[in-house]
Image (cartoon, rainbow, N blue to C red; front, side, top):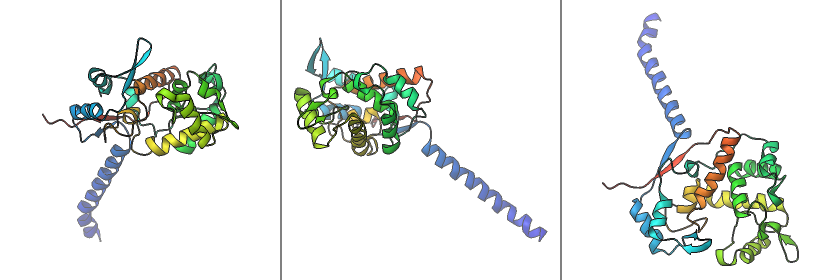
Length: 261
């Protein structure tokens, strides 16, 4: 029996080593920073945006204008130091509480005291609550926009994330979408908007702000916003909250374009 145990030791040791390797591989695949590899080169992706006329716009001198190629290249940069939170995986939930969220939302118009609903949206739809708040803050002008205040038809309908709100007729089209979805309360607008974003973007492969705007898997298609600054503005707002409340950031998923050199 003793000799048999000795003979089995190398096999047992090998099994242990393989087990450790498998666990390490799983952990490396599910935690920490990672890269998303696009099938396109950076130049091909930029050209796709230019050729498909994807209505890439920006603000110059207070006016909405079409973005030129140089501006698109600037905001498409994937430099890890360039607004890094635009590359954070938005599927990662934030460990926070209602009181903290309500403190953040203080003075934000119709968004004020909606911390409980935003936290519910995170838990229901697996989407980062700091992103949801920052996005709503941008789209509603800190809770003050006409669309955020509610558009009255047969009932009053709300839209906090600019869903269906096209640039030239943002109020009309955004209100129409809110009515279609029956977002007849601020709570319905938050939960319904979070579900839309989760189902169509964050939990449907476009899981970072960068991917939501630039879609490196299929450049020029299925973009959340027309403003080329959209991901970095939201990332900047999020960053201020992560710093102020000493929050741990989620995993990063940096986009890399194909390099043919």
